[in-house]
Length: 552
Image (cartoon, rainbow, N blue to C red; front, side, top):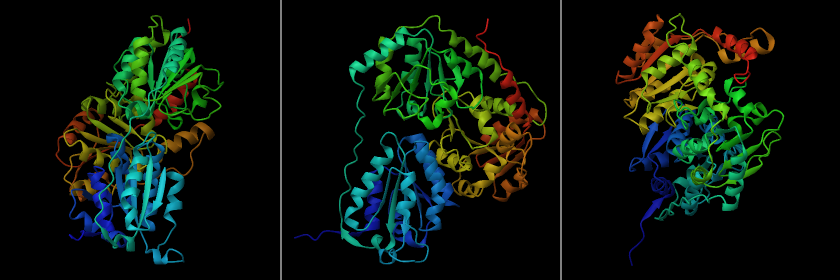
């Protein structure tokens, strides 16, 4: 009788990760995960050693957003695991599939006060869909399969695996991983579709709000087809930019700003709002339906969240792509939809600063030049800060997943790590990070990671030497700022100290050519660009007095 091959639990874990199609694990080796690190030496999985666990989690976050497959990050126990929390929570709230694995102390010391021991399962439980500790090697295949199933199932999110060091070394008969299954979401019932069509055809001025679910379901073409069939203008959330091409005549821009912009007037004119794949965290309905009197249709894979300002007339719950196909076939166009005329007005506003060479450059001009330098399929990842609001409002995305904006958890520090992950996935595309000086500094150490990997990425820094978004809020609320000023390194010398390229914008006329040069450097390039954020309060003032484009 042939004796079964023995392997340890760490080797079995890696085998199961390979079975899930994992190509990269982002993280930092530690004492309590050394068995897994050793097993990875014989694996097809590439371990990307990062400079901080938060950077690793953000890389896994963006990997999940761009591929729809769970990005994987790993740390040791205690402080290594707690450093994963911010990026992991960001992915979970923004519906990006992610699996985090943390080493843990031996099970023989978990019952008492012990070095670096934390109850990690309960720490991660509130910010994940599944959080578990591996107590015996026999359960590894089930734990891994369940973690990925939870992480990737709609609506996607986080799964956490706590892997004690002594379990990793336990030997077991070589077990096969479990079959990877990804069942198709059910389609919405036929009768529901008929009711939706009736409401839609009765409306005179329907408007669509498209959320990130459209991108997750790869339903962007179907969204365009539906909008054209219904002649319904489409506004996208920050996280759905590009789901409806900005250049399309039915595109009316981006919603999500807590301001009365042109698109807000359009939603007010609507007698029916069709929300497609909209997660409440993307755009609080309190901002666009304050009186809770707008008629709403909810097209999504899951029932609507309970919210006073979001009570749908009907929900078409099922595969979003299938739902949009069915609606497009049966709805009648609304030839006189007055909201559609917003497209030209919004387009003109977005392009108004293309030739403005004042210095320091206005945020509108920086974004205009950024857009001009990029191809439609290139990817820009925005950090969080004042520049994010301008990017969300003004960057004109033509394809889905080409402008990544964290907007649920909205954590600073995502852009540079996220750009690294994006470049690993799409080496043929130009990948750029846009960050404020403060957000850039939060994970700037990952420049070394990018350099070690030999990546060609560009980081454009909006530099104002302060926490600009907080100042914007402070000035709006109280008319004065408080404790927002910071100092910065010389970003050019900082870049060069890593062996990267550094550029400083000293004339606005040089910005476009500098971005183009940086994208073709073949290495990591950092552009330090001062920004005139006096435009923040000018925008606030202008939006307060903006009159409706629908007034006679």
